[in-house]
Amino acid sequence: MLTNDFSRAKHCDIIPGHQRDKRIHGLTPFQALVDATPDGGTLTPPPGSYAGPVRVTRPMTIDGRGAVVIDAGGKGTVLRLDTDGATLAGLRLTGSGDSHDSDDACVNVRGNRNRIENLVIDDCLFGIDLKQASGNTVRGNRVRSKPLALGLRGDGLRLWTSHDNLIEDNDITESRDVVAWYSKRNVFRGNRGSASRYSIHFMFSDDNLVEGNRFVGNTVGVYLMYTERTHVRRNVITHANGPAGMGIGFKETSDTDIEGNEIVYCAVGVGSDLSPFQPDTTIRFTGNRFAYNGVGLLFTSELGGNVLVDNRFEGNVTHVAYAGGAPASERNRWADNYWDDYQGFDRDGDGRGDTAHELYAYADRLWMELPFAMFFRNAPSLELLDFLERLAPFASPRLLLRDASPRYRRPAVASHG
Image (cartoon, rainbow, N blue to C red; front, side):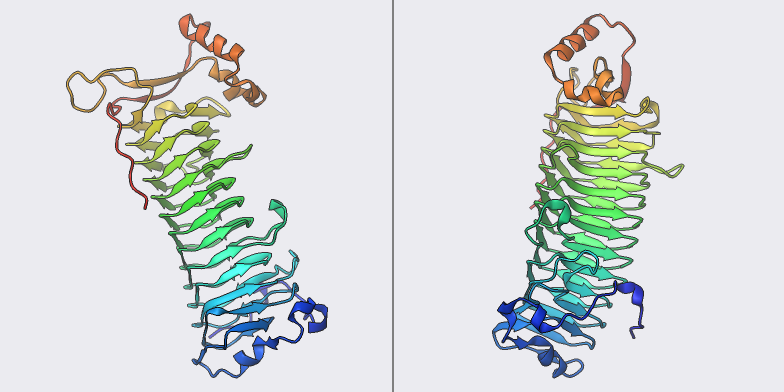
């Protein structure tokens, strides 16, 4: 049974119908159909357009069968789900307000064990907003924010203190972020995200799974901040570009698995800041492909504890870089990775290089240690300086990593559907 918890939503005023856009004047209020549906009943409205807003306070099934539109007329939130065990399906929800103060959205979920499926959401500031809502299924929805500048849009999907939810097979585009804050044990599987800022941004959220998603053309793919025990596996993250472009990012994160992902054409494939953070924990990279990125892996203020096994590095401008202090190369483990610039041989034919792969920083130390020098990376003068450093070093180069058993043959690229 739900309890009244005013922390689940910000205060918002009741907006009368005459203050809403004239396009919904004369439409049948959808609330009347909801009020006439008994507890546990099924509402299958006649096809057509209806006026919002709507509040559902009892368990029921509402199925629009792809032919029902609910329009809030550009004010407030379109539909609020204030119950447990309800189902929303086959509706188009549109026309929320544009207030960040009241979190104007298409769907506010404030209950548990609900199903939100196959909705078309557009012209809404926030898409689907879950607050203190657990055990819900959010599947097969298409979400788009309002046509605003990136920072002024709302989040396509937001979880706040919401646990054990299944977020599956949704298509979220032209929104701001997908966020999961203070939310545990959620599954994000098979979703598609594009033309937004963060594909998924976790903060203070442990034990989540991100699996089989495809994120294209967002500023950041998956960002993990102050989280533990997250699994990120078999995702495709591509074209995360711009000054802040990053496929996967860490901030003081610990005990995490990054497995079988394909991270390509990003400004930075993985950016790791002070991670792993907790003592005696590791972050494990296994079977990933880092290809054609500006920097494959960028470690900042790094203390060791990264384990990188059986990954594939190819076509990156720089495979691995360190910033914010000397690399903890001896405290990280590199083994069985493929490096497209490996210069050794495999005379015994065992598929491993006869000698270790060692990566040193020569003139690259300039832009790694002095951020403003990044502008000159790959400039002819710096390339010449790097060549001279390698030919006759003025100072001892810095060892960034040593892979004692590099793969000699290029592994096959895993299929991600």
